[in-house]
Amino acid sequence: AQTVTQSQPEMSVQEAETVTLSCTYDTSESNYYLFWYKQPPSRQMILVIRQEAYKQQNATENRFSVNFQKAAKSFSLKISDSQLGDTAMYFCAFSAYSGAGSYQLTFGKGTKLSVIP
Amino acid sequence: DGGITQSPKYLFRKEGQNVTLSCEQNLNHDAMYWYRQDPGQGLRLIYYSQIVNDFQKGDIAEGYSVSREKKESFPLTVTSAQKNPTAFYLCASSMGQGPQGEQYFGPGTRLTVT
Image 1 (cartoon, rainbow over the protein chains, first blue to last red):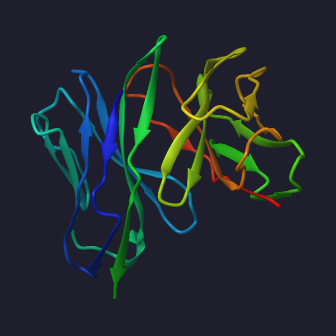
Image 2: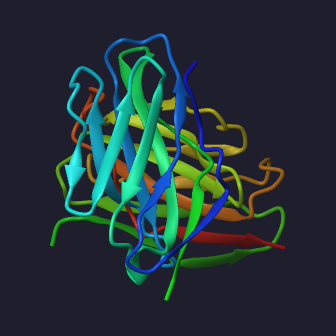
Image 3: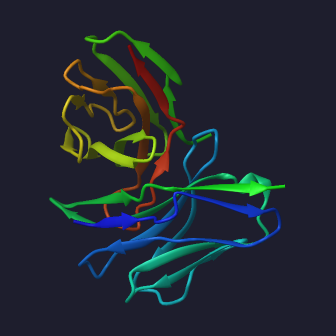
C-alpha cells in the first residue's frame, strides 16, 4: 500500500516571500505520478502541479515548482513570491496502480498555509 | 462550461435517515470517485467507478452505497449504518485509467447529521 506523509500541519509565510512544503511517500511501484492540490477556503480542490516519476526534470508552473527526489521518495512544493491568494490547504497526492485494473490517488493529510500581509 | 456539479452545497438530516448526495459531470470522463474529508484526515476514498454499471469499494465504504447507471452521474447514498456521517464529501472524475489521470473535483457537499 502507498502512503503519503506531510509532516507540517501548518505553516505561514510573509507576502512576497518563498515557502517550501514537504511531502514524502512510500511505494514499491516504479511507475507513478505525484500531485500537489490546493484547497482554498472555498473548499474547491485545484490541481497545482504534477510530476511524472520517470522524468528527472522537476516540474514548474509559474510561481510553483517541485523538488522531486525519487531515491529519497520526497516531493516538496516551493511557492515563490507568495500571494494572499495562496492561503489554502495543500495536499500532496500519489497515483499508481492499485490492483483490479484501477489507479487511485492517495492523499496526505494536508498542510495549512497562511500568507501574512 | 464543463465541470462537475454537486448538490446541494449544505445538507442536514436527522440520525437514522438515508441521504443521497448528487454528483454530475459533463467532462465525458470515464472514472468517478467519492471522497470524504474530515479535519486533519485529508481525503479518504469511499467508492470509485471506472465505467458505467461497475464500481468498487474504497478504503472507507462501510455505511455507503453508490450507483453508476449513466456515465455522467455517480450518486452517493449515506445510509443509517454509517456511524459518523457528518463530514464534507467531494466527488471527482478523471479521463480513465492510468496514473496520469488527473482528477477534477466538484465543489463538495457539507453533510450534517443530528
